[in-house]
Length: 114
Image (cartoon, rainbow, N blue to C red; front, top):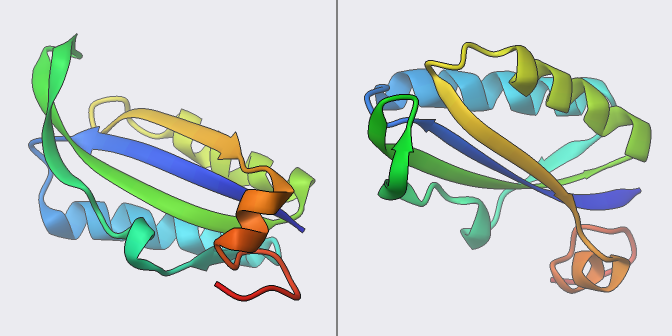
C-alpha cells in the first residue's frame, strides 16, 4: 500500500450537495480498487478561497484535500475520473504520493498508529 494526498479545487459556484456528490464518486472509485479514503481532521474541506489569478474566468474555488491509501496502480482510475470531469466544475486536481514515513505518521499505512 502507498499513501497519497489528493487536492481538488471545485468551482466556487457549485453547491455543497454537488461537491459532496463528486466526493462520494471519488471515494467509491478508490474503494472499488481496494483502496480507502481516510477520514481525519486533515481531510475536511478547506472551504471557499480566493485564487491569486483568474482560472476559467473565476476568482474563487472550493478546496478539498483527501488522504488515500491504495496500491500504486489503483490511483490511476481516480486520476482519470478527475481528468475527464467537466472543467467547469472541477477546476484543478493534484495527486501527491506521500513518503512512507509521512504515511505511517498519519496512520495511512498498515501497522501504524496515527
